Structures are given as structure tokens and as C-alpha cells.
Length: 185
Image (cartoon, rainbow, N blue to C red; front, side, top):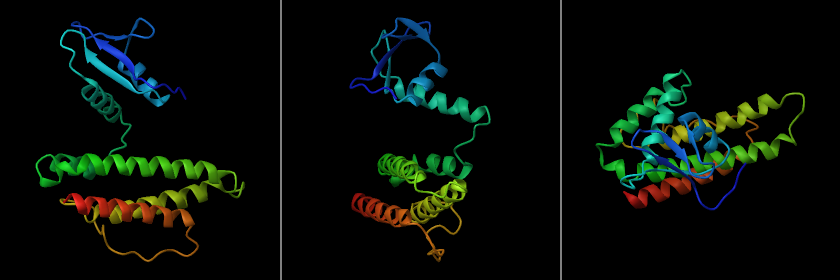
């Protein structure tokens, strides 16, 4: 994973070609996606106007992945995102999404750390249990979200026996996130 303090600067020429200023060559959207997957931050600017086009190109990369059948965003999430642009919740959505993804990254890191202590005969079962716990915690959080269409979200579900302590961490993080969201409302 490449680590650097400054983002990789990509300049968009009038011809709409994208130019990598570090390597002095032209790049594609797939190249930019690869840089990001490798841990690089990128910034894409219009050469003539200096406008920051990063958000526009990142959305285009996501749209291309989705159109190729690499569906990561469920329809109900996309629908809720569209709704959030026209509701009072639009001011809290970016912070909520950023904190949710930070929690996801942290839980993925914990999962990797825990892989060494898992039963080597069945690591997939342990990973699946952690993922289900995370998804239940997220579903509970989304039930209190304005305009949420998640069925049964927010309902208190009975906790399965033998649940890992990672779920407690996730619940604590979600409670903190909900408290922050309440303060913003």
C-alpha cells in the first residue's frame, strides 16, 4: 500500500484525457481506480479552469463498476441516497457515511487480526458471523434514519448465543454515531 502525504495529481486536458503528473503519462479511469485500491489519494483537476473534478470522476468510476454488474450498492441504499438530497437529513448524510465506512474499515482490520486466532478448519464461518453482526448493527442504525426503507430496521433483535465481543464494539460505535447524529439534528 503506497503512503504519501499529498494526493496524486491528475490533470484533465481539454480533450478530456487524464494526465498523471507523477509519471508524465496519460491514465484511464481504471488506472485511477487501481491507484485508489492501492491506497493512494487522488485529486483530479481541470487544467484550464483549475476546478476540482475528483468527486465527478470517483462517481463515474463507481457507476462503471455498477453498470458492469459489480453491484455493491443495493437499490434501497441508492434510493435512500437520492431521497437524502431532498430532505433535511442531507446535511448529516456525508458525516454518517464517512463514519460508517470508518467503522467498516476498523472492523475489517479487527477481522484480519482475529484471523490468526480463528479455528483454521473453518475461518469462513467466523468471518460470516462477524459480517452478520456488523450488518445487524448497521440495519438497527438505519431504522432511525429519516426516509429509511429498511424493513424491520430499528427493531430490537434477540442476540444469538456465543456472539463475539466484536459485536459489542460495533454496538458501542453505533451508539456513539447515533449520539453524534442526534446532536446534529
